[in-house]
Image (tube, rainbow, N blue to C red):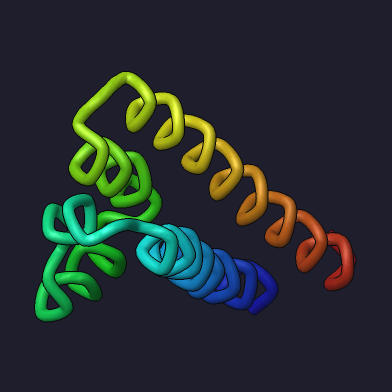
Length: 96
């Protein structure tokens, strides 16, 4: 049962953190860069199906430069570390 709870927490956290990172960036984009982002109709498909991979894809897709690649790698790393840290905390709290 403990493993199932850890899996649910990790999947939920992965989706939530990935969506938060992309939405946070979308709020800061100008009109030109925003036009390159995923449309609302496919945003959740990308986040749910491909998270956390959707994070670097979003940054590369909107920036189309080395800066986008660097931002994507940095935010991808932060997302993975956050989700794994949360999974570790939940595992430790459940006595694992």
